[in-house]
Amino acid sequence: MREFTVTQFLLLTLAAAGAAKKSYEGSKIVRVQVPDDSAARDLSNMISSAFETTECGYVVDYWSDGIGVGGATDLIVHPDAYDDLDSKLNSSHLNFYVLVENVQEMMDQEALWMGERKKTFANRAEFDLLNYHRVEEIYEFFSDLEGEEKVLVRHRCREA
Image 1: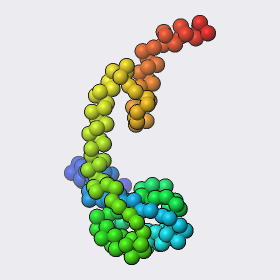
Image 2: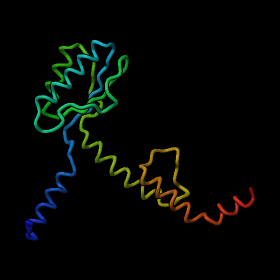
Image 3: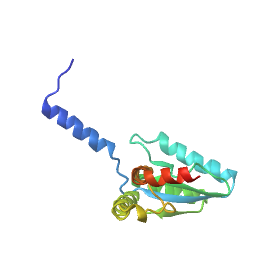
Image 4: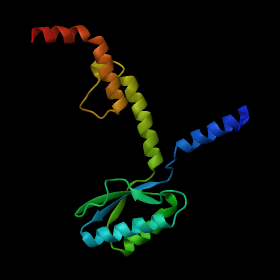
């Protein structure tokens, strides 16, 4: 069995932690209009060929649920692939526009916003189920509710 020194273990741990957080810096979300079956085939072929030519993971991938004919499809595009995709979409006469200029900025902003919301909703009375919450927040809310309101819940059950 191979033994690791403390330094090797720390380096492996740091490498794994760095690999776990993928950066989307410079990646764009592009919305493509797909008016008919021909456009859907063209777009599907573009995406398939992008996967065949890359070694680094995604170059172009679906951001929304695949290609919907008669609507729009959102794609996430690696920064190095945007110019090529722009050219291919233009040559195929597909209408498109950039929905998000930098996905990483959007994700960082969401993380910041969610952190602020967590502080805001520390008080259960302010928790609004009509707004978006991550599943962890919802579980925490119901767990707190269950712990705080057992007497109230039991009382209501007895009345019924």
